[in-house]
Length: 297
Image 1 (cartoon, rainbow, N blue to C red):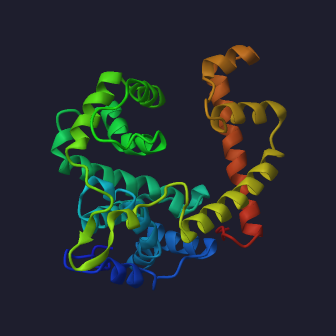
Image 2 (cartoon, rainbow, N blue to C red; image 1 turned 45 degrees about the vertical axis):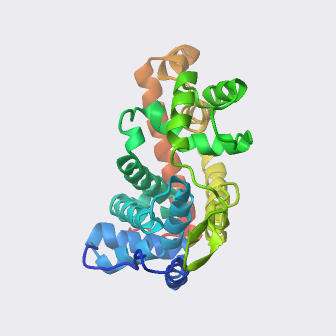
């Protein structure tokens, strides 16, 4: 994959031209994606890996432009996101049953986050998990609260932000002051030689682009159907344990379930593992029958 070049956005280059260029790479159907991923993971096929990366460059660009408000070159943001995309392809396991885009988004965002944190001197004095969470969510929540005025936040707004992010109120105040020094007007022109303002390029995180929305909707609908059918292969205890351990927002502990069923924690873990294996097997067989994947006999 190292020998395969990707389109790049140079400082003097046009963002419009880059977006037009990456749209030449077609999106992959589930079956195509699976076979390319297998070719890469099992045979080291660099052409297959390159196709997997290039088919997701629009996703990288969409995510990267969501971070333009930090005042960093969009070309660098996209480049860092592409690095994350390549890392995702290297580690992607197609046999787990989910789409590459779902897995890659975490790697793309992580790569961009690390670049931003390296580039912003204001966060180098504090990069704990809470500081990072506050740094990357403060602008969004301020926008939701319509706290766009310069200066310190209102005490009620500070309290609301601290509660939402589960951080200290003093940290909210200090972070807001640090970030305010680097804020730019959304009505400022992007560049002297380009028509348009910064606000024209802000991404509404609540409105996915067509490619992302299509891929997410298609994958979610299909996987929900497979999951619902596969759950029928489990007995009631297996269904309950796998649901409480893996399919809820707040999973129960092994200890809680062991007390509920009057069995050991290790026994609960064994039941969970067996149920998960049954689900994987049932979903894989169903996907093969649907022609989405091919399983070697």
